[in-house]
Image 1 (cartoon, helix red, strand yellow):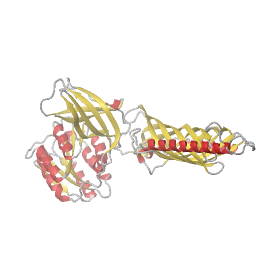
Image 2 (tube, rainbow over the protein chains, first blue to last red):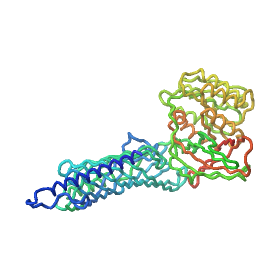
Image 3 (cartoon, rainbow over the protein chains, first blue to last red):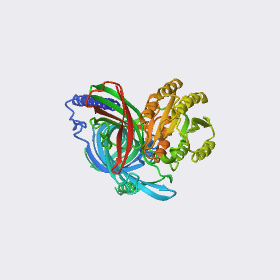
Length: 231
Length: 326
């Protein structure tokens, strides 16, 4: 429900922005005819100032928020995830831009169960997270930005156990989805056609059950992307 | 550009490694177990009943097994219900029990002679010790046992844990006599209500057999426990147990939970998670299934059937469920 409200609010925000753009365009058009107009800086949203960037990033799952995700004795045992991101963004005017970011991060946890230092059995869990983030970028200055957004996480996990495991040797796959809220702070510097986008971000998911855990997944991270853009 | 590549590569190298965690497990042999938090009929039509069951399932380390799916649960049609059909129609996981907070728990251990064969290696004593290891700072416990014709309170609620441990070791070598289950449970319920002011009070009744002495009925126990606001957790041990229905009923109706250990090693995992159940916020599965009977049930009927939980292709546990059809 909260996610739905957020999406609606963001939609309203975009709508408001579009109206502002139209008004600004009208003002530009109302300038004296004698003065030659330069090509408008604000075209139809999303057509100009487009960029596409790809790069790497890392997530850190914050233990104090939920032990079921981060404590290997109680739950999954996530700490870091790493992977790649791809981002498309469109700077709509000096202050605002919209972005869609996706990618995939991987975490691998190997649990080795020992008794008085002697290995007994092991279990390995791989978690893949595909986030799809729709963000609204608010620029402060030329390239520094704050970007709130909504996220859909597609989660996949695979557990493998060793032969000596009490449950025997087996593999089990699981999947789930989680909506979330994302906030990023970063900079997207443009050098000619090249775009360098570096940001840090935080994300909190809803409490819908995934992998038998209903608590929110809370993580922070950073990503560094490089690509090209069109002004 | 080079700097950026350096940052990206460093990120991958630094964080790309597998997290390897070493987890210490105790030397004793434990088995996964499951307990029934509740079982209720949520709707009924002639010949068709929807039953909802809440289950808490833990592995050999007494950790809640979180990633089971509906495919892991099955209800075989077996004697005397060959003509009944059972079909799962809803499944939820990762639910949590209500938080109850600090607890006062009194153990009532079965020291009857039959324990020598159902628990030859004294897993119940090991299990109780594990339970004591997991006590919270404000939780308090007591210890009592029954044998021959009545029960003995060895330690009142709030006793020193070290003393309780010593007595547990003595109990490991002092089995014998009958099973005065009902009278002991009844009278200890009355006594427990006066021992502590902690609201979250529980009596943990462990037995491997049916009552041999009489004196009170299960309904009287339930009524008293409700009056005194005491939850009775019942733990049954052994394949020959013929009072699963009574133990289940006492637990369900007093707000406690029921656990059956086919193997004494399951006691270790159950007692390892018992603190979570007593305190609340324990995770559980909610399974809804439909029972179709060959003909409509005309009078209130209790029956026990097994839910089989396949934890892996080679490991399955059975959880007996009491269902009362209206």
